[in-house]
Picture (cartoon, one colour):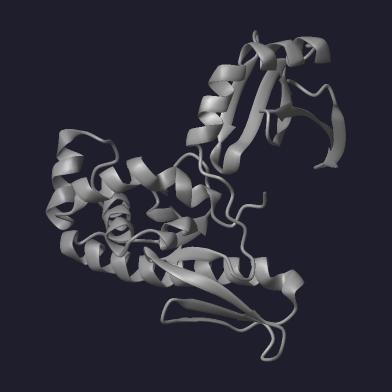
Length: 248
């Protein structure tokens, strides 16, 4: 059953449309994106079970709901295999460098302090800041690990790195500019260390070879022998990393 309940919410100074999809047990928000060049309706299920419906500019709500109904079987299958959101909250278990850690919130001082030890991540201060402080903590840890790994791999091939940046991309784990700026997803800190090490080597190798030719992969495996294992891990488990810290 599709619930015909169009909703409107204000986002980035524009009215953002959304619909509601019901799979028989749970309601899912469906974000609607009207695109000037869209010729047909398309559906995409992103990490954390976020549903995006792209439609032509003048598509009616009736047609959208009909399309959702037509796509019901496919959509439910995609939702089943897509990782659910894992919000940062007290008692949640999240990975840090591939190992499970339980989040433990403390309302007392010292405010803003976050530290990890023996499978626990302790967060101090007001609960409303818990998610932000954890995100900052993970970014800091990721930056530290990437700086070490990048420096080590760059030294092997005599490459110069101009700067390292951390972002939260949804379609790639890293990038390398011609100017020597390496950009990585901070979410790799959730993965086992060999994955971060491979990704650092991958982008460092691009400082010598900008494409993904056999020459590039040969260089990457030379400086990082566990390249095949790192690539395989990201292919099999990467989507789960994008759901960590997302709200339900």
